[in-house]
Image (cartoon, rainbow, N blue to C red; front, side):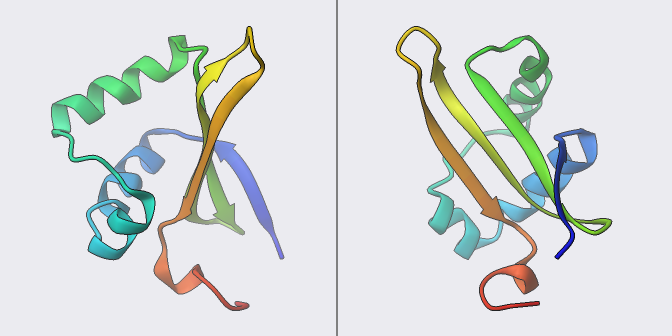
Length: 95
């Protein structure tokens, strides 16, 4: 398997917006309803945040998902992991 983590760039931002509109993925991730303006503001805030770490997931050259840690508290050494595969053909089973 050729699975890699990479920068969560504009292409992952666009794909994640699409992925999180899927009712099944939205339910599984418990994604909150946000406006496009809120999403864009969040995306542009990532470079300056120390409480949020996010990467894209690729299988070969195909972007398939997202993973990261949010609510990072460096004082207590804690955070909340999140991750999902957005490309449904890669969910479950073996490819």
